[in-house]
Structure formats: structure tokens, C-alpha cells
Length: 353
Image 1 (cartoon, one colour):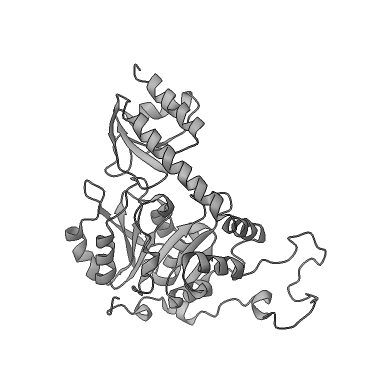
Image 2: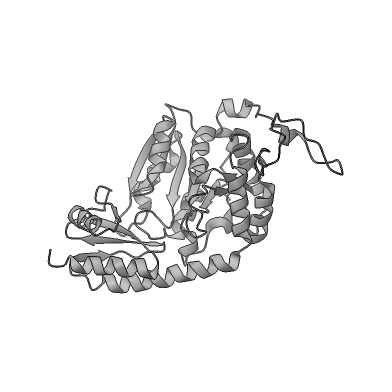
């Protein structure tokens, strides 16, 4: 545990003083027995499945996640995608126009976008050539009072690699601010989740999502795991009904089908290896970067040219050549066996072009 960390020194004064909105569903504690007549929330009384407001605290989801992830329900925040987890962190801990956050580039672009929306300066610390943290270059920033949050995406997007766990622990132990470890792709990684450390590090937030391995990208539900104190701050600031009934039901159904989710993850991991093996045979692919995610970053001779050539063949991938350290790279998501076969055939057909 970082003994120098004091969350009261980080939380914005207006957030400390904030009296959160109390919804009708928050005030009714479900203590009475029998069928209840709900006339408290100005809802339409005619039942159609979604005429009532959703559970503002997503209690069922948290109970199921608690059993699966082995954490307490009061250490779980359920948000409108991981983007809400990111945005609320800025709102809770960063004074607009004053405070700063630090990211390691290249990385997930929403850290920057959310910072710009909240008028927060971003310090971008470049990763070294193997896409790892340079602790020597990072060291001076660990003592900057204005740096309130450090984002670490692991496995990282767009590079695919996991960040060395020892380096993440060093940051947690030596930085007196919030460290958000974004584990959107952790289900595809051989490296253990940092979720096991939320009781060890009181400045740690682990962000995960249902968009990737769980196959619910259209549902937009993300999760933050942290200390009870940090989760209470998230609940204070979030909108009262931030996750819809339909989205909660989709997540609950998926949480009841762990065997199917595990099966699909296994297929994606197998297809990832098949794809990498095939990519090694493509002459204009210069580098295939190690990956712990459901995508592969490759360096080619001319990324923009190859991107448009693939578009013409009906295949959409991501051109990452504008990102730091990613000149002439393409990011290829692992698809189904059929999709991957089409991708490889298209890539091979371009070898003479």
C-alpha cells in the first residue's frame, strides 16, 4: 500500500461538498413485503417492460460480478461504458484548467478526448521501443503535485502488449495520485489482472469492459473496481440512472453464460495464432508485434496504401500510422475463421501491388 496516498488531498472541493441527486428508487429501500404500488417516480404506469426506471445501483450485476471476480459489491462501479469510468475520474479528481494527467503514448485515444472535454492538460510520456514504460523518464512526474491521475492501458491499445506488472506496481507505490489500469483486453492476456491488488493499493482503479471478450460492445457497459472510498465517490457523481434496464438485462444474461464466453475467448485466441502464422508469410509485413489482445499490430511498407487497398477489397482494418512509434502500422482485429481467411487472402493478393 502507498502509505503517502491520501484521497482527501485529491478530491475536488466541490465534489466533497456535493449532495448527490436522490432518485425515487434510491429513497425506496424495498423494506415492505407484498406487491407494491409505485407512485413515486412519475413513471408511466402501463407496463411494457421498460416503463419503470432501472436500478440506479445495478445491484444484481454487482452481486454476480462480486461472486465471479471475488471482490466486494461496494468495490464495484458499473458505468455507461469504460468512457464513463474515465470521464468521472476527471470530474472527481481534476480541477479544470489547473490539474494534469499522465498517459503513455501510444495508447487509447479517449484519455485525451475526455481530458480535452474537461479542460485537463495531458502529459504524454512516450513508451520505449518495446512499448514499455521508461521508469527513468517517468520518475520526475511522480512528484508533480498537479498530476492527479496516471493512465496505464494493459494490454495496451493499439500496440497489443501487456505492460510489465513490476513497473505498474512501482508506479502505484511511488505516485501519490490515482492510477487507472485499463484492462479492456485482459481476458485475452496471459498476464494476471491487477484486480487482485485493489485491496493492496488504495490509489488503484481497475477498469474493465463488457465490450470485448464478453461480446457486448453495443450495450455500452464498463466496470471500475477500486476501494470502497473511491467507488463511493463515483456513485456520488454519476447520473442517477446511468445504465439502462435493457443494458443491465443484457449484462445479466451474459454473466449467466460464462461457459459460452470462455468458449468464444478460446476460439479468438486460437484464431489469433492462426492469423499471426499466416501474417508471417506476407512479404511486405515487416514486423508483427507481440500481442495479449484480440488484435495484432503489424508494420508494413506503406500503411496508408495498404489500408485503402484493403478497403477496395471490402475489408476494414485500422490505420495507426499517425500514432507515436507506430509509423506504417496497421491494427488487425481477430475475426472469425472465415473473416480471417478473407483478410489473409486479401493481404496476399496485394503482394504484387
